[in-house]
Length: 80
View 1: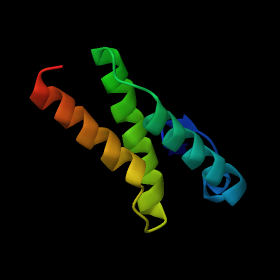
View 2: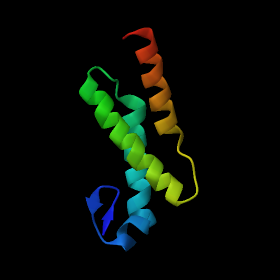
View 3: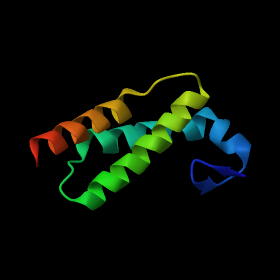
View 4: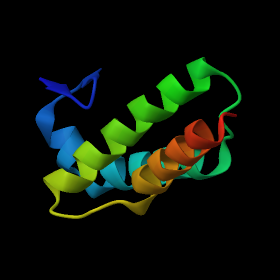
């Protein structure tokens, strides 16, 4: 089964031992990595989508994807 862009058994992604470290890692990447080039924005949007999909499956809302997209839009509005 294809979950979050990775080929893995469904029960692995529902396990807290897999889902929690993955959410923490993607959240840290989104919070700490600056967008310097368009490629960085594309990778960040991919990570934001993956993290939000994982959070939505649990009925939660992750703040890191929202902050990343808000910062990306603010940078685009300033012309950076």
